[in-house]
Image 1 (tube, rainbow, N blue to C red):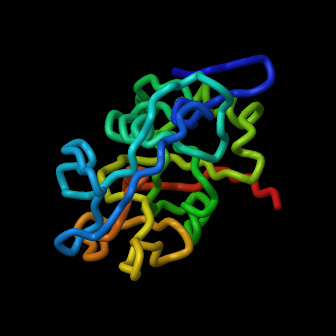
Image 2: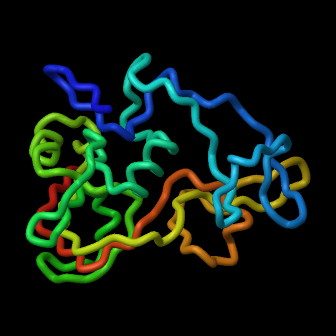
Length: 207
């Protein structure tokens, strides 16, 4: 669902203020990160622990810059537009991707390569509208054409043991490939795809 108004555009995967998740306790159990009271749905088929979500889309205020975990995972898995949540079809064999500039570091303009991204694809109408009306893009963005996407891993933060409770092992989130030995210590927040045949076609950087 895309919540629109005359002034702003709220992407489907943006979290809302009424979707705050109550604090939960985490610990290490048998060498891996775990919730103190864990449920079957807390882990995916790879055994990775996921951040929990509360779904109340459209309630309260949009929290730009904060992604709703469940909606993001669904959009990535089903190739849904990150804004309107409709299926994205390729045009002349290419998909459109709107990402952070950090996703395309080292990718030359119009030079095909591969990158990893936690963003779902985007349809052409939503791309044009987003650039004009989405507050989340004011810090900059990159536009890619992509030949195909495949599962890569997860975006999350690694934890380490401490004398009271697990604490972050790194100051920021990272992309972790499936099979990475750090994954048992990671709390995942977003699904990550590998984008093949990716070409940077446009960008905007605002300091």
